[in-house]
Length: 98
Ligand code: HEM
Image 1 (tube, helix red, strand yellow):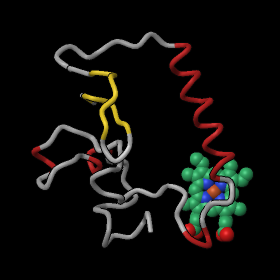
Image 2: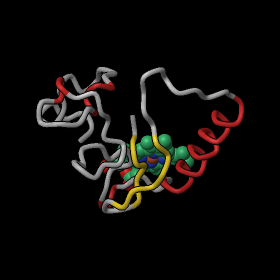
Image 3: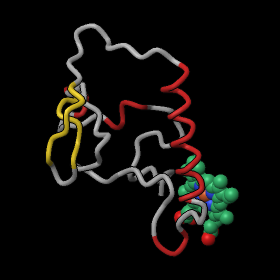
């Protein structure tokens, strides 16, 4: 499914901009990391052939991200307006992502 050219333009290309939000994706600079607007990306697939190692992989990815946060100094990009406060949506999300 992740390689289906009917779903994805150039499915094998590394194109982060494909996750931009908005009807006219090229007009928007927001990434849909909440997956509240569209569910297009299912990295572990779904259904009977879902990755059996989903929990194991997620555990390691959380550990990987935690190490990135721990070992690097994180700064806002000048001009960005990130607000870490929570906002109630379908779930709690960050108030301002960018
Ligand atoms: C970030 C890490 C991982 C991602 C994104 C991932 C993703 C996937 C995806 C997309 C599938 C195909 C599901 C389908 O056919 O619809 C799959 C299948 C599978 N994955 Fe993973 N996987 C990850 C890590 C792992 C790890 C660490 C293991 C083993 C230790 C594993 C074992 C398997 C196996 C055995 C299948 C075949 C399941 C089946 O065909 O019934 N995966 N995985």
